[in-house]
Image (cartoon, rainbow, N blue to C red; front, side, top):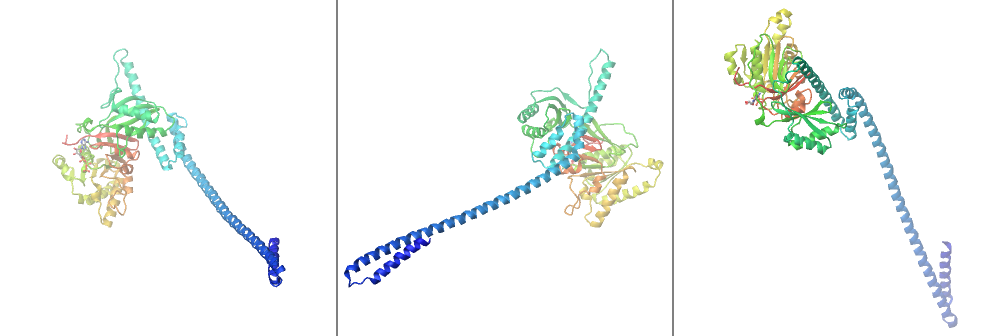
Amino acid sequence: MFLPWLKIGGSGLTAVVLVLTASPKDIKLFTPANVVAITLASYAGLELRKLQKHYEDKEREEDMLAAMKDTQATEQLQYLSSASERKRLNVDADKETERQLKLLQQTAPLFSEVLAVTGQNGAVSRMALGMIQNGESLGNVLLATSEAEMQLEQAKLQAQIHHRQLELQTQQVLKSANTQEVTVTNSIKGVSDVAPQSPKIEGLTKAAKVVGLQTQCLRVDKAPSYERLIFSVKTEDFNSLSKLKAATKLSLGISEKSDLPFYIYAPEQIAVEIPLLPEDRTYYDFPQRQWQSGERLIVLGQSLDGEVVINLASEDTPQLLCVGTTGSGKSNLFRAIAYCLLMQGARVDICGGKVSDYEDFAERFPSISLNDMGKTFEYVGEYFLECDRRNKMTKAELAQESAWLLEIDEYKGTVPLDDNLRKTYDQQLCEVARRGRGLKIHVAIGLQRGSKRSKDDPQALPPDLRDNLPCRIAFRCVDATSGRMILMRRGEAVTSLQGRGDGIVQSGLLDRRFQAYRFETIP
Ligand SMILES: Nc1ncnc2c1ncn2[C@@H]1O[C@H](COP(=O)(O)OP(=O)(O)OP(=O)(O)O)[C@@H](O)[C@H]1O
Ligand SMILES: [Mg+2]
């Protein structure tokens, strides 16, 4: 850079010296000296211009370099932060997978049990893994596996029943040697040959095609309030079953809010319960029957497998909890329950609900009392003291005592709002339910909705009382939450029930859909 400056300085300086030294008197030298000075000054000016351009270029280059450095730094920064984010996500994903696999391992015994029975090697494990890979939450995976467990129990029971039926058939064939053909009938079971034109079967077959499964309807069983379609399905992918269920609901026009019971019936066979239209349903009046004094049977109604009867003397069904929306059939059932017990010599106390429903009972049965809802507290107290009294008795003395049944329909309305009274009420009722089972003291509680006891809902059912009411009866509910609170398995099925006595009873191993007997006039 020094040379250009030297050139400019030299020519500029020479031009100045020439201008200053040239005397106008010496005309010969004055003119050429000025011309040379002007040329040198112009040269210096040009060089100066060049230098200015050079410096401008240099400055621009530096700016560009600085800008490039900035961008590179930002890019590097971005790269680094996204790399660390990726690393964090990978660590999180690893942790999640580890957690899921751990949980999967815990449920593995269940899978292998299902596999042992269905004989479909690895299918349930694949279902669970498939669900997890599809981003299904573990809660849903576990729900699906518990459903599989329930279905397994059903499949086992069905297999036993089929086995028994086959045995009976063989015995009958052997008995009647070469004479008549054998028919195995059930009290109400309407087994029809498959009608290929049935819109329900068509709907189901279409749904299966959409999902890519091959099915064939094997049988249709007609229950009082629904038809059970048994059809064959061959699949290794259990995910496709939930898709098939969703597609079937669509093709049959079943609303989102209602469940469609869909379960494994036997290996490679699925059952689906499709509701009947109200006009196609069958109702049964409470039948006449022989009663044995001292027994504690409750005749509930009819199911696909015949009449459903529970026994309060059994360990599984000493105390009852019944839920159902308005009009679903609770009060009708409670009348039937009271009748059953009264016919077997028990004392029955009606609290809650509409007392006028039992006016006809009062004339016929002296051991019934009909009480205003407000009196429930007193009755619970009396039952509590009776438990104390019976607790001190010998077995022989207890055998002499009659059974007592406290019916609390519309339970919510009977819970005191005062904190102290409510505490006593809760404690005593829970104790009666817990201790009563061995003392011939029973309670039946009816609710419209199953909700959790909380500050906002102080009249809801407390959990310890619910735990002491092991026999659960669910009628139609508008939402699945009630069903899940009351039933022990497949609670969402309550939304598939049709009301007016269409119910599910669960207790221990018992799990049966039934149509309650209509109880209008006392038989
Ligand atoms: N098992 C049944 N068979 C035929 N009809 C029934 C049966 N149960 C109930 N119904 C019909 O449904 C109506 C309502 O039944 P119920 O009074 O028992 O319902 P609920 O559940 O007690 O309703 P709420 O909560 O409003 O008291 C009855 O009047 C009756 O006509
Ligand atoms: Mg009622």
